[in-house]
Structure formats: C-alpha cells, structure tokens
Image (tube, rainbow, N blue to C red; front, side, top):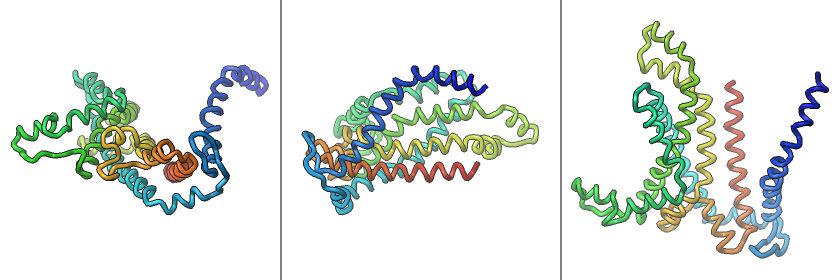
Length: 290
C-alpha cells in the first residue's frame, strides 16, 4: 500500500516542479537576498561595503521610522474593527432570503475588483474643494464651511479609512457569507422550537459558528493593513506634513528616491518581524482554543 502511495507521489513531482522552482526564485531567494542587502551599504546600482548591523542601529534612532510605523499602526487600529463589523453586517444582509440577494452580493463585492488607481482617483475627484461632489452636497444641506479633505490630518485619515473600507470590504464579506452558509439549518430549526428570538439565535448560534472564520479574517486584515501603501500615496501623498505617511511609503522613498537600498531592506525586515510576531500570537491563540 505504501509503495503504491509513493508511486503516486512520484508521478506528481513533474507537475509540481515548475511551481516549486518559481516559489524558490520569486519568494525564498528574495527573502535571503533582502537580508544580505540589509547588512550592506547598497545603492540601486551596486553594493558598496559590508556595514553589519549599522542599518538596524540607524533605524532605531530614526524618528521618521517610528513616526511612519505609528501612522501604520493607527491605520490598523482604525480600519480593522470597522472592517470586521461592516463585513459581518453586509454578509448578514446578503444572506437574507429576498429577491435582491444577487444584487446586494454583487453591489458589495464590485468595488473589490477595481484597481487602487481607480478608487484613489474617484476619492480625489469626489473630495475636491469648491466643486467636488461631497462638498457640493454639504453646501446643499446648508453647511457653508469649505472642508479641505487632504489639507487637514483628521479629515485625510477619515478619507483614507472610508475609501479603504469601501474598496476592500467585499472580499471579507464573501468570507463571512461562506461561513454563514456553512451553519447547519437544523440549529436554527431547533432554536425556533425552543422559542429563541432572532437576537438569541444570532448571539448563541451565528456568532459562535462564525468565530473561526472571524479569526482568520482578523489576521488577514491586520497583515493587509500593515502593508498599506498605494491608496495613501495616491490620495494624500503621505500628507499633510507626513501625518498619514505609512512605513511602506517611507521604505519606498529611502530605497528608490534616496538611493539607499540597504537601509530600506533593514526597515523591511523590521516590519517583517512585527508581522511575524503578530501572526504567531494569533495562531497560538487559535490553537489554544481548539
């Protein structure tokens, strides 16, 4: 029996080999190359000299690194809880039995297929002062003050958070919707026999059954939010005054505008270890609850 299984596994090797080679070349090799780069004074043209841990030491005393890391953490704090709640609410609406079910599911998910450049352009177009759609609506309902969405730090963060939620909530909604459809209908039927109300069914059946997928969404959302870059670069450019600049944008500027790939690689590894620690904590919590 074992020999037969081994023979089947050997037959699969030629089919798996191209993907394994691509994984080595485009995933494993860059990881070790980046670690080497962080230990050198390395420009866009060539590596210059071995500097050891100097780039990491420089990073610890760099106020821009800590400020952009805080900006990124603030973005995670602002978006993650809102994303979980909003995607769950939309999934519950999309799971209701009505003639609008297909329309609701499509409407919620369509923004997820748009590119980041498109959603950023829409945000800039709608939030322009004096003639933007949002400011025009505010003037129509009697608000005379002219909001400058990109010039005020609080308004800029509000814009980024709302745009990100609108753009990416559809994907998490689909995950919650899949979890809802996996809940056995017999549980709800039994609760109805016992006289459970709608809120009790949601609290004691729906939420516990969705807990595993909810934890996966939480982990994916934290990791994705720590890698935020493109929408902030395109909408606010990191402004005003660097108030919304995330860590990825700072790494990009150091590496490709200041021509210092070694220092950029060191900061990339710092971010990598933060995400690794968060992932390990989350996975250990899931393992302990099983």
